[in-house]
Image 1: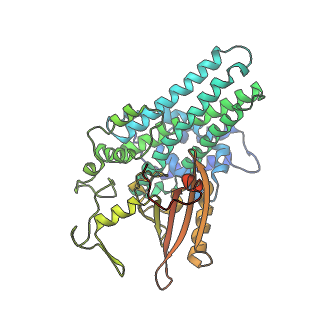
Image 2: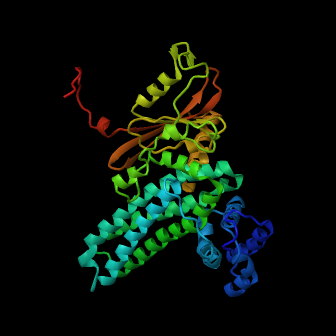
Image 3: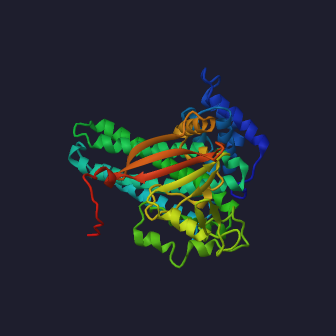
Length: 427
């Protein structure tokens, strides 16, 4: 296995292993024992490649299985192919690349998980006396969400653009959402002073299993594939996009060191690299030149530089999805609420949302496209702020549907307004 490529694909082996998956997911129960089923497919299972595993699970999703249904047998499959995965010669992420940053964040996560395990082994008696320490330690694990955001908004879109077979990575996103919810549930459980020790230990076991399982899947499957498909230069371009995100567990000084001496615009200005390969944040430019109007309307003209500055000056996040359901534009305000990366440009909008909420996105677009509705909105609590998220159908003067505009705004201070302020007061 060590001499094999992580991205090598044997279609015949994939089809044979589908039989193994069918046996595991048999709704009537296994027609044969699990051991017999494994032995029938052992040779294929012990030589499977990371990309073949992705192909298998993407196929399950495309056949109509939900992530929740796949979860019922996913860990059995990972255990069955453990020999193949652990037998790989794993690439060492090159410093100054996106994979190096992701690996460092995973290492920091594992250190925190190890510290919690050590505490549990050292403590005697009930956990009640240490519940406060556990609450803090488990709540701190929520920092892994920033790690998942980078993967969801940078790496997954780039993989999709590189090869069509990666268009079905919803299962990984669903696993990350499951881990996120597990952290939240465990934190809430520990805040209950009457929670029983056995429930705490069971919950922590599930938490460790979910988080460590994702670390392993990244290390054994996602990272080897990425290392083979992208050059160091391309991975450096992805790293430039990560600057827009918060670090997962890493101190700010260590996180910023990854970008020391690097500039997203400089990294992506090399015309020798296709934009799809190395997206970044290049300066806006007009089709007819920087000094000429880029946007001509009945109410005035703007150059590309002016238009970009105007949109980014608005105290809202704007994202536009075109009539083909492709993400085609987003703004970069000073204090963006939800992170976005150039890698998502051109991506199907349903791949930009967790699998559990895709049906809501599709419903909004259908209602807008067919005309019954023109607006929709929700409001949520995020990082201590009240955030209003509104969707607007975009149509031309003839009423033709052009797409959807998403507008997100922090309304925390707006909610607190009262009376009037008729004069400017900067104090």
